[in-house]
Length: 97
Figure 1: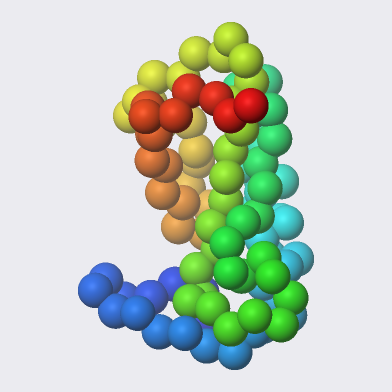
Figure 2 (figure 1 turned 90 degrees about the horizontal axis):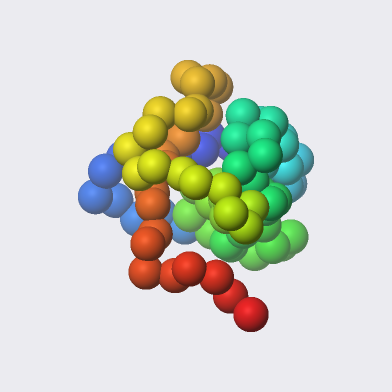
């Protein structure tokens, strides 16, 4: 498996690595398990989720919030794990049709 992540302030695009797809799926499953009922689904998104596409070696995930679930920004719900996970609250979008 190719190394994931980039040093701060750098942009590097590398050839597609077939391990990105199962790695993204595993990370998504781990985050979904931790969030439990707060999550309406977690998906591997971005260029690393497209087979054959060169990309930055960074796994991006999208979390769909369960309707009515309350999440407080800054609340630490993700345990330390093998992946460096960054949680960003986007309050500008409430829901998509």
